Picture (tube, helix red, strand yellow):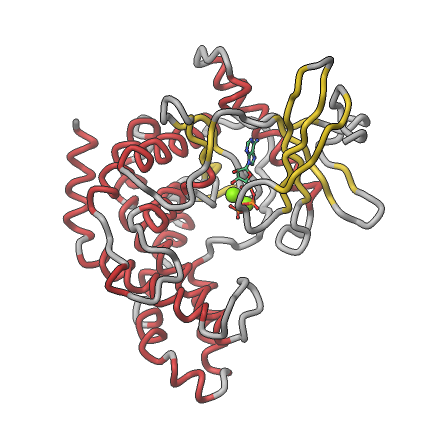
Length: 360
Ligand code: ATP
Ligand code: MG
Ligand code: MG
């Protein structure tokens, strides 16, 4: 911590939270008898190849969010957006002698992230927070943000990669996933819908979060309102339906991503409506009609895309996602197929309901 502009005496550092990507510590400092906490993270260099560029993005984003909140009249804006603490040299990231990259944020006290959605209120609040996040970054000045993971949501490219891996997989493995493969391959037109609308200039590129899970929003323990969107590593240029879609994927079922009993993977329409209401309450004003029309489709597409990635990884021998047993990624692909099929089956109805909220 002595590398960073942090005052006081070091007390302790403890591993913190349930993130899967970075190493996260809560660091306590004694500042003239007052204890103050910080979040210290080692950035996962394997997933994010260029941490200095990534931190250039995050630093810009945090400053823009803070300025936007103050413009909105927020008094305690430092709790409503992450604040990057720079090194003594003024950089947003420190590289250690072993090549590790470290960053520090103010600790947001009195708020927690939840791993699995428990009630409608949480779904509403999380979606409202991500909508507000997009709204505040809609006019980010300056150059385009760096793509921290190039081609992250290029669904047709993901599908193409799957097609190759499937064709080259050993026969027994290929046979084992024939039904799942058929599900993905037969929907290739759907896979390219959003990117082709983008290419035609019909869907605008915006600043999106790209990891809109419930636990990436801190919720106040007393008021139960969303306080702050965190985990900004994947913030980059993207399409609005990706963010709303990943919320739908992760917050419309109480089943875990690797649930083996597919009966339990139930799409919950009430959770969906809570997400839609929360999201439109903050993002409704800036969305174009075509963006709104593709929100439900985004839910289908993100679930489909993650399913494709799980199945690809299974065929490749589980090289990307951490697994506890050999079929883990196949199990995960199946939960995504189960959810995507349910969304697909009621897509028209959900679109009508969402349009009603718009007019409310
Ligand atoms: P993921 O697996 O979601 O990608 P990650 O490894 O990228 O996670 P983060 O989400 O950035 O890590 O942080 C891990 C956890 O630390 C969060 O879920 C949250 O509980 C906590 N956390 C992160 N930043 C803060 C902060 N500024 N104040 C308080 N808690 C925080
Ligand atoms: Mg996280
Ligand atoms: Mg993360």
